[in-house]
Image (cartoon, rainbow, N blue to C red; front, side, top):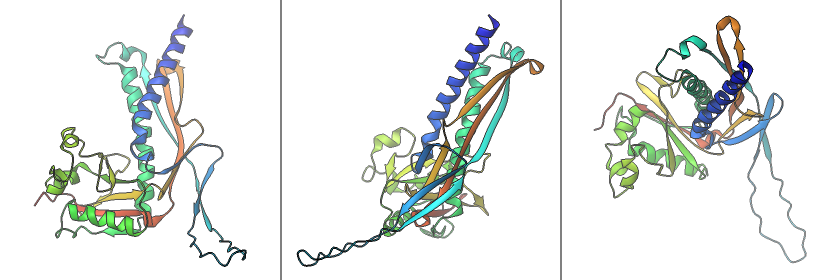
Length: 285
């Protein structure tokens, strides 16, 4: 009977971890060139260059064969793990589900790690910077900065799906701008949800909270927000995605839970990444 109970714990806990993880990972991964089920320690992305169409010559003349250039970007997967213990005695004495809370914490730690890997790729190789002086000296996020960031991506021919990563301190300032909240510019129903907007000014808006892993960098009161085109950053993970190993440990009188994930993110096209500097403490004008 004890073996059956242990099997039931393992299967339900694994399901909880995977479900909680899947609810979080798409926050940024959907805005990258994602590769799943990677085997081996390395992953690569092939990037096609640009060719110029040629005018056709006279009938039956030789065709101009264009040489399409390719660039290959390679990265090595990083291995991550998060271990915790669900104590058998404590689980029976607390007023919450220790199993559920451990599952959420484990899944959240891995989801944040994937997010941070993607952010690190943007932080390392942003092609253009929108200074904090745009829209006013020492200003927080404003319409002028968003407009310049979008125009920069369009000028670089990065016109596909794009996201804008911001901190809650930045959105407070942007909410004071009529272009962001007036019904003349946005759909009020979306604002009522409390999540700003799904899409505005050509960006999908993604809030980045305070994260122990790093989050959006801030120095001297100036926070770096980032926006990028989906082809600018590549992300990858090993076969199976998040994996869990759960074992009963007699010496701990509980289950030892180890969540494991191997993945990486890499800059593919720096021109498709824009850093937007915001004076974090600056309030609305």
